[in-house]
Amino acid sequence: MKKLILAVALIALGFISCKNETKESMENDTSIVTDSIATDEPEITEAPMDSVAMHKAWEAYMTPGEPHKMMAAEEGSWNNEMTFWMGEGGEATKATSTAEIKMVMGGRYQEANYKGEMMGMPFEGKSTIAFDNNTKEFVSTWIDNMSTGMMISRGKYDEATKTKTSMGTMVDPITGKERKVREVYTIVDDNTRKMEMFETLDGGEEYKSMEILMKRA
Image (cartoon, rainbow, N blue to C red):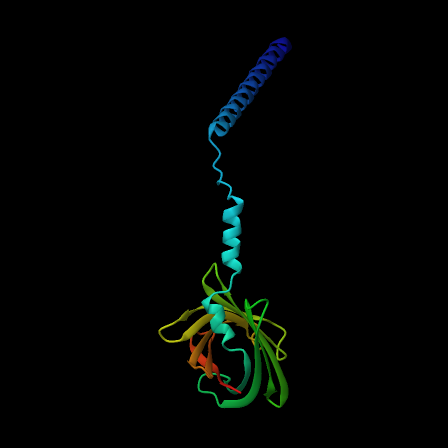
C-alpha cells in the first residue's frame, strides 16, 4: 500500500514539473516573438537641421522687431497717478509714483523702475517686458517691496484698439490662494498710457483692483 501511494505521488510530481516546463517554454517563445516584432519596426527619427537653417532660426529669434520698437518708444521718465480698490465696490485709495523706463540687452527687453509712496510707506517696484518672437506674445514680470513674490503674465497686442491684454496669476497674501489677474494696457497717445488691473475672486467674480494713468514727464 505504501509503495502504491509513493508511486502515485511521484507520478503527480512529474506531471506538475512537466506543466511548469511547458509554461516556461511558452513564455520564452512569446518573448522571442515579441522581441522579433519590436525589432522589425522601423525607428522614426526627425531629420537633423543643417547648420545654416539653425543659424537663421536663432537669428530670427534674437532679432528685435516692431513690438520692440513700440516698447522702446516708452523710454524716459513718467509721472503716475495710481488708484487702488481692495474689493468690488470698495473705497478707492490714491497714490503717486514715478517710473524710469529703458531698453536693455540691445533693445530686446524693457525695464521699468517705479518709486513712490503707498499707504504711508515708501514704494518700489520693477517690471520687465519681453516680446517673444517665437510665441508672438508679450511676457512681463513684476516685483515690488510690498511682497516677496513675482507676478508673471502673458498677452497679445491689438493694433486696432492700441491695447495689450495679459493674463497671469498672483497669490492672495490673506487667503494664501492663487488668484487670476487680467491686465489691460492702453496706449492713449504718445505721452499717455493707462494700465488697468482686474482680479478674479474665489467666487468667480472679477473686479477692478488698480488703475495707473501714466504721463510722460
